[in-house]
Amino acid sequence: MDIINLLTRHGVKPTANRILIAEMLSKQTFPMSMKELEVKIQTIDKSNIFRTLTLFREHHLVHQVEDGDDVVRYELCTSDNHDEDDDMHVHFYCESCHRTYCLAEISIPKVDLPEGYAQNSINYMIKGICPRCKK
Image 1 (cartoon, rainbow, N blue to C red):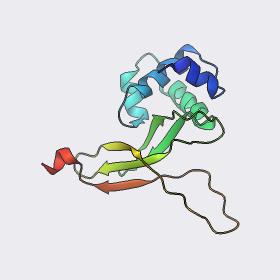
Image 2: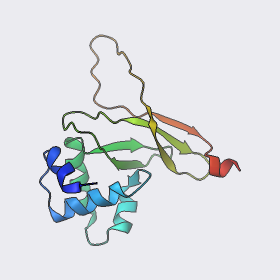
Image 3: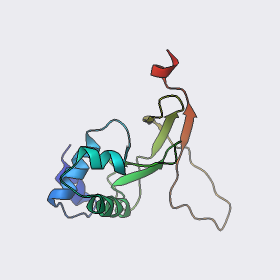
Image 4: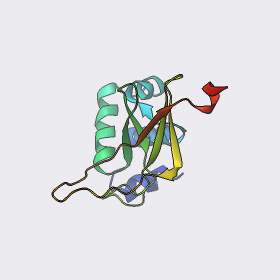
């Protein structure tokens, strides 16, 4: 994945810290928490990671997922659109191992809201037992 091109497409200036954080998120097969990012990237302090994730969220470069443990997790958005997320998908939270999995092949169904409501984001989380824990 060309991280610099992805940042640029989303209107984010590619600085060294932003590239490093985006690369870390792109290498994962699951959404990461702030704590997990801090542990993996020890060269960037917590406040800089938080500011970068906030900027990424404002530019639709990350999805923010609230998992079953009330932990906010982040995953890189591969959308080509910096105004909205067009690659939103379902997530699965395993109640046994407490991992959150991306089910990228399952799109979030369209929800027709009543008149007067405006959607800003959506969090579609299914909870249960993952195949590994089910064995």
